[in-house]
Structure formats: C-alpha cells, structure tokens
Image 1 (cartoon, rainbow, N blue to C red):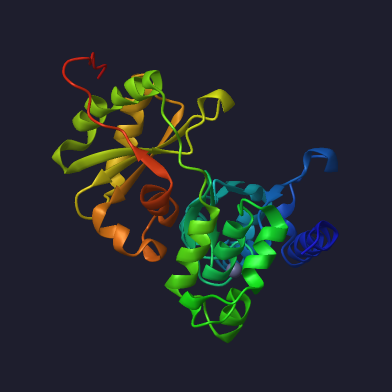
Image 2 (spheres, rainbow, N blue to C red; image 1 turned 180 degrees about the vertical axis):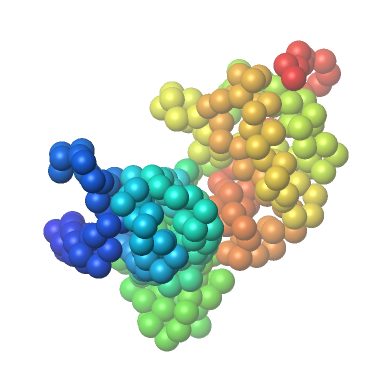
Length: 302
Ligand SMILES: [Zn+2]
C-alpha cells in the first residue's frame, strides 16, 4: 500500500468512526482546536478499534455520554495504547480486551499474528507480513529480496518462495530462510570490547541464576553508537518474566546500550515458531560467544 492510499484509508476509517459514534469523539465546551483525538494505529488494527467503539456504544449509559471522549488511541512498540476521559467502569474492561486483541492481530492485514522483533523493532504480524518485514532487511536491498523471492530453492521442493507462498500459508522452512537472510553480519570483538562484555556475566548470573548457560553478542557495532544485542542462552525455554529484572541490573551496571534477549536452548531447534524468532536466529547464525571472565573483576551494583 502506498502512502497516499494508506492516508486515504486512515481518513476514511476515522471519518466513519466519528460519524457512527460522534459522542465518543466530542468534548463539549471546547473549541475544535482542542478537540483532536490522537489516533495513530496501523490499518490492521482498525477492526480492533471499530469493535471497541461499538462495545463502548453498547455499554455506556446515555446519561454518561457527555463526559466521555477518547484521548489517545495509538500503537506504541507494537502495543495498543488507549486513554479516555469519562466513566471508567464500563469502558476499562473493553479497553483491556481491545489491547489483548491487538496483541494477536497483524497490524498490516488484521489476520491472526504474533508480536515479534525484526532488527530491534517490534510489530504484530501474521507469518506472511513477518516474512515481508524480514525481507526489508535483505543485505542487498529490495532487488536482492526480489531475486530471492523469485528463485526456486531446493529446501522448498524446487519452488520459489513466491510460488511456495501462493500455494498456502508459509511454512517454518520459509520463515527460517527469510530470518537467515535478514541477519546482520557476525560482529567482531576486539580485546577491550570483549573485556567490557565479560562484565555482563556476573550481572546476569545474579539476575538469571543457574539457568543461564552462555552469553552471545550480535549486531554489535560500538562505532555506530547503536550498542548491540546481548543474548542470554537459558536452559530449556526462556522465561520472559526474568527479563525485566535482568535489564534493570544491566542498565545499573553500565550496559544500557545493550538490548537483552533471553533465548531458551530448546527454542533453537525451531526458531520460526519460537517466542522470539529474531533472537533465536541471531544466536544461531549472527552472534559470537562472550566467554566468562577469569575471576575477579566484578563490582556489582544491586
Ligand atoms: Zn498480515
């Protein structure tokens, strides 16, 4: 979809919503200038919002409608953010449901999807649109991606990815291939970078405990100032609840330039269906090991 078509669709969506549910977008007593509702969601989520507007229409008592208005309906880090004025009780549970629906709805096409990373950015996508995002990272750009897309491949039974995808939903094999293609170069660590990264070991030992098996680093380019991705390989499956505390510990110990990803060793067998396919493939194909430092160089800040 080009940007003009996208803009037109967005305006049509908003105009239709305001026409159907005018009271949800109005703020009595204020001029139009102050009346704007901040709306910024991708097209795949329009249906989620339309359902939300209809549900609120159904549950809001007429007497309370004057005090109600949406303030903010936005996508942030691939999650739906909603803010509104007015009676909370009937609306809040509907907002929670809408957020949950958005979290599993492709933000491009509205089909079922999952929230996944590609090169540091998150989006909720169906398999098909996840592959499209991956192809945008092709090292040889759009033309490289197009050639790959149209070239028959043995792993796909001699068919091209384009033909393969036409025949049905993308398989794990195809997703894995697209992931592999999109990987950044394997980083090279000089002695000082290696030494610095080794300082993350005691911090993560403390935060993640004995399930931490090894550490790897990917997309690490200190001169670019973009930091890198630190991958903590965990026994079994990764437990996302351990992540937040570990990220905080890393930041307190001077590693806020590194994005931490937890990858379960069990997930490596099928990265395409893992919770975090991008980090899995980084671990397999595009990262280097950070060896444990010899003791004792750590001064932990708790
Ligand atoms: Zn999609």
